Length: 113
Image (tube, rainbow, N blue to C red; front, side, top):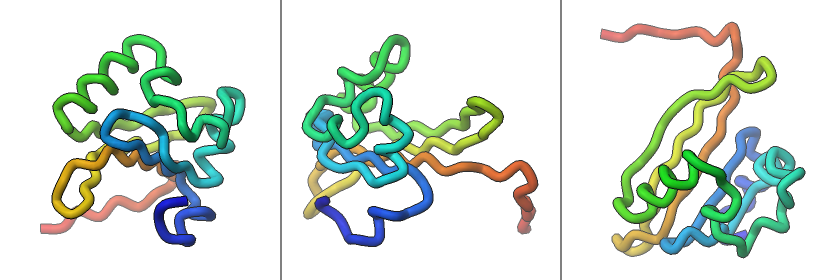
């Protein structure tokens, strides 16, 4: 694990890639989510190899342009926020981090002004 120990048991999925798209870290939630595709065995594989179209093309574009991608999904009655964003080391592009956070159905929404 390349980051702090707190990430291991963080309640949302975290996947980290290097600048070329190689998966360099996953926390326990991400490993469980991707278990049928290899779970922790995906570490060392390229993120492009675990996506099918049209997702693969989107991820490829993100790696090339270093552009963030944010969206929600609803799968099997569970809604999640997917937040994919570049990360940097000493100011240089180092890869992507994907956060997958469950959105509770009864989540409070505050409007601030």
